[in-house]
Amino acid sequence: MEKRIGVIGIIVQKKESVTQLNELLSHHAHLIIGRMGIPHHGAVNIISLIVEGSNDEIGAFSGKLGALEGLLVRSALTSYKAEE
Image (tube, rainbow, N blue to C red; front, top):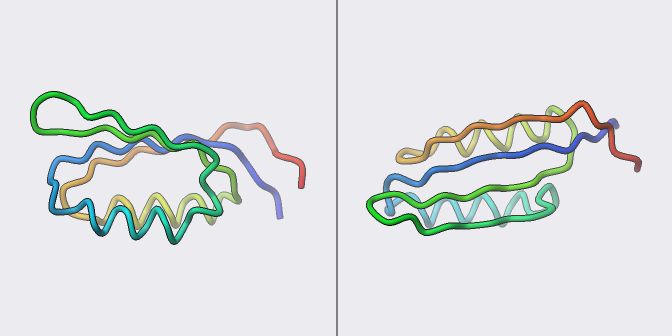
């Protein structure tokens, strides 16, 4: 299975979604290399994830994140192919 490295950006607009978000992050922890959360003044918080996995794994993960109400999610994969 070919692994790639990518970035997932998350903007949390509704704090009610944080519990579900944390559950998804815990369930997909094997894909997450790094995580940075930034509380932003006002009504939003920002989380950036560095991930490593197959296209399908990362796509499914970002899709589940994007399905949560109150989150804006964007992902980008690099062309770099990680060694296993």
